[in-house]
Image 1 (cartoon, rainbow, N blue to C red):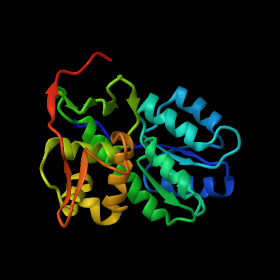
Image 2: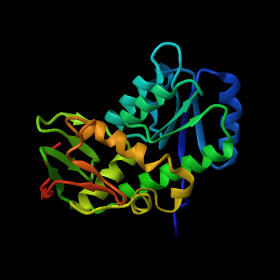
Image 3: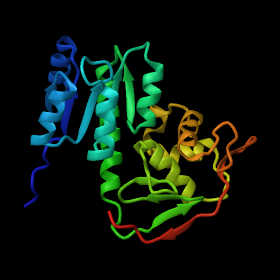
Image 4: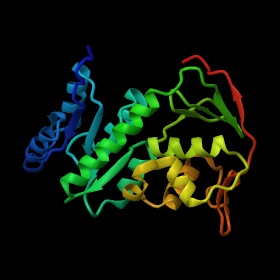
Length: 245
């Protein structure tokens, strides 16, 4: 007999009760198990008792801000994060994506769009967990990507946080080194069926990835722009056994 599937667990972290309570009720009606936290400290306490499948995280909160908690969730717990941001916070959104957030929505937002984004992020996370367990690391220009742990390390072994979208984009390049990949193909490889809904512009995604792997992002040497064609990873890629954790 098939075991019943448990609902996905969402932790909603926002200090605005007027937003938090009705949003939690709406998400519960969509079939999610929702817990609430009014601060980063409360979120950490809740997560110690029970992990979440995804965290919806407000950036601007008193005490520890959402970006600090986001970094902890991505690096220490590998938990998918969607940021809840205000219209006037473009810099914070960029920083959030750079430290590993999977997506963001701008307040005020349409709850149905948020649900679509939640389900998209969860599908991608589930596909990553179901990946084969015997896959070698990618080595390129001193960088190392562990495709199972989704961990990127530099030549000194320091871990560089990357979001799920950045991981998929980098993986697409590593699977096709020295090949020109146009924008449509990259979107299909990175987003699949959700591309038409979640196109934040492949060019912006490339720019964020360059900030992580290029010595000088103003003069890229690894991820090149091909005029009229798209982008290309201009280096060789080798494979090696994973390093011990």
